[in-house]
Image (cartoon, rainbow over all chains, first blue to last red; front, side):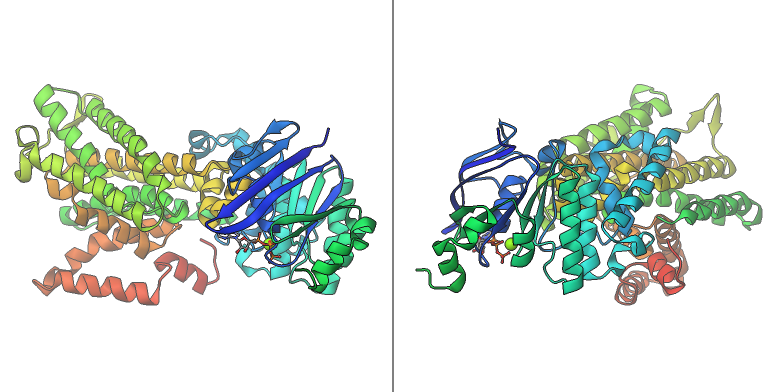
Length: 253
Length: 310
Ligand SMILES: Nc1ncnc2c1ncn2[C@@H]1O[C@H](COP(=O)(O)OP(=O)(O)OP(=O)(O)O)[C@@H](O)[C@H]1O
Ligand SMILES: [Mg+2]
């Protein structure tokens, strides 16, 4: 059975059909990419699956359980993590605290114990700070362990989002354009990073415009166009698909 | 959160220990007690406004519930003051919890309007239930008895309030740098980011709202016993605004800023008394200027200037 199954998924914003009857499934342990021109509905699809938007119609199943319409925090408890195309960093916090908050569900969140500074909580927090620093090193942010988030470059913040998502210890991670706005060197680093994440056993769903990176990393690819599924298959199949070529060269319609 | 965050607490405690020995007379003693009471209220309010990013324009209403619980229950029903204080806090907590859910589904201006409305409703209730509350004239509050002796002298009150303030600063610092506090700050920084890592944002907003309301209620009771008198003005809209102003002037999301804001704005009306009739205008002008030149508030601005963490 596939880890994630999406069936006839649609969402409408007024007259805009951002995602229309999209069906696909993702096996555990692979890198699955979603590509398509600007406005194709890729981010909207991520928002639907991670609970940020509620589907108008259709089904989403995680390990067979229907999760369509569940809130993002409920999905977090099921091991679903994500990053955002338009950065969602807490600029009011230190960089490392952004990562630490990713471990939210694994911590004792009791208000009273926190206010009274229970030693067990402090001890766990100290360990967590170590874990978070380790994660920052893993994504290549060792320089920024002591920095405020609002003092970091765009490229560094993109990776900070990945570190925060990894702090959840997810089973399934959605990366929305992790290489957008990065220079070629940084892009290669992110490419390696995504591979490392996949090798650690996390199922990766990737949206990315950098085709080289997509072809490099993906086990399977879904192509969206105007909210609809245009094609799905291996990199090889997608590269040779006439509809995809037409859509990307703009001769579609 | 910097490692030296607790250093400020030691300074606060040191100042609180020295103050009563250097204050020239009871006028200043009284002023400092009121500063400290306000500081505790503002600390709680800053957790809500500065750290969690949620506005409340009705907090004086919660002060009012606490104050009137301490006035009405011992006077009319013979309750022990501590029991009355607890009852006030419980009622405030229950009321805050009841209205919080629908309120926090609202955003931005609507949240401000909803809390404003709540504060006004509480105030009207206190004004109108004259047979219990004395109506617009207010009522006297019996003395607070603690462990067999009456809290009456300023000295005694001073130490009680100083202890409350020190504990509140300590607890606030603890809370901010904990999983709960990080979740709170995260939902302020990016609500959607905090949700996808598992923060149930409505729950956290409700929790901190209830907590700061209960803080306010308890300090309302303390004020009532200390002053020995309550009137509806204590629970009115202008008092709510004054508290929010203390948060903003001192510095949002700054524990020590809360103290500075409370101290300054409690002292300012006294200092401006010489302006006879123009106090309000000068007061307003000072607020405007400080907002223009220090939009982040006093303590964060100074901390940034001198390159030190808060
Ligand atoms: N909340 C919303 N309200 C209204 N329209 C929306 C909303 N979210 C997305 N859309 C619309 O849905 C369509 C798909 O947008 P989406 O952001 O998913 O595209 P995308 O494939 O991620 O594009 P890009 O490559 O530029 O990131 C667009 O027409 C967009 O304007
Ligand atoms: Mg997008």
